[in-house]
Image (cartoon, rainbow over all chains, first blue to last red; front, side, top):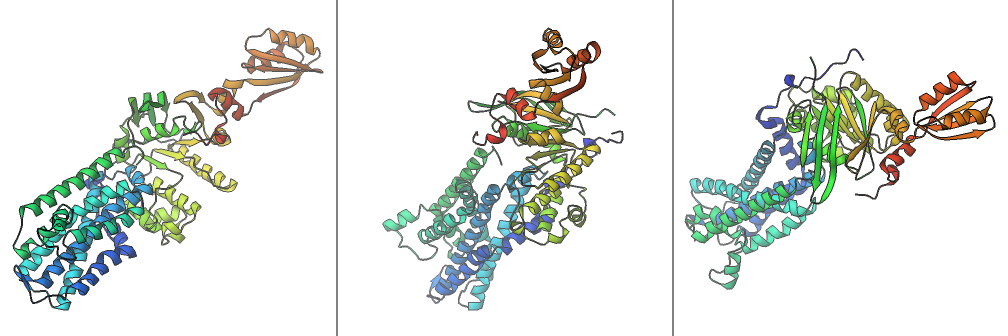
Length: 260
Length: 306
């Protein structure tokens, strides 16, 4: 063909910010918000748990607030941890569907992709925390200074990110849709052991075992503004589990170079 | 302007542990060529395509796409691929999928226009998971063509299409190729390779075992059969048996049948030096060519090999 043209690579542009854009963020956020299972387990369930437990001992003081406030922070933490791990595990489903491979054939930079996912996890975690806090306001029993209220909510969000890393790690170990079926019960168990649902007597054998489980530290840290108490072992626990989950996720991701 | 070849592989090897998937491939594809990558499963087709796509790196040798590293070519939207399955999110709508992909390519056409051109406007709001296989395949093509790629890689592109679908698919591909787009498709449909590719690259055991047009490939392996009616068949047959490049000669009545690698020389001899008439030259089927070149079972029947 005499009319044949050739492609000149010099005329092509690489997308700005590695492909990060408002469009991607919007669609990824919509995906999470449209998922009925996510909405039930991350938004409705923690708020319902708070209504079930949050009325107990509201007169009793804990640190700068009362027991009801303590339970509210715990439930917000649990909801945000569920949300964050679900967002992390969704990467595994995308991988199983071949979507990750499809994205690797576009200019989207992996860092931009992880940034989008992290922002979505933060946003949905934030919504989850907000819903529980609104439940607390509506119920009217939690009592703590406004500054501590806000600081607790923000700290909870940061602590929940430990479980985004767990989600990615488990997502790579347990492929596809099964990841969340494994994570849901595991997180409930961790929540019991992590003093999130019911307090465990300090110093008991159970307490020693529980203090080594992954929700124990992050939950304690997220409540530390309210309780005014941040023991060293809680910080060690949170940092250690963060390192384990991030390390595990990075290890599985690097093993997974073949066909993704 | 002299343009860089669409694909240049030099001395490419790929090893997975002790398994050699690609064992030294040299291949240059010029822009605008339509090339079939033909071979049995496990021949190294997929490993080679993955390296062209920048999904994996060669153990040795180099891969260039339009003079660039594959990842650099991907970043500029110069390469697209259409896989046969997967690669779609079921919970997105068709429009969202196109919008998502389009947002990654600077200068991509507007989403509605892309949907229109791909004939999927009517299903734009449908969830991908609810689309039929054919609709999903059209969506994959719409996504692949978004960046106006210089090189399009297709994996078994027409599996599941009916005859009419296959014909219109290939006519669209040929039109794009005439405008300069390079197309490399992996297949084990021998007929498809023969019919639609300008060039067939036959791979077996990680090597290129043949490279040429469909008819060249056929001639390469088994030669052609020349048949003519002559006055004195026995004498002509004796002459032919003495020619170089003739594998066998038969006489049937007043017809002489010669199997030859250089069928042109046989035909020239018959037409210029004898009274031959009704001369016929036939090639063996590409399936037979395939068998004798790869030394394997026919690829279409060879599903079990990894």
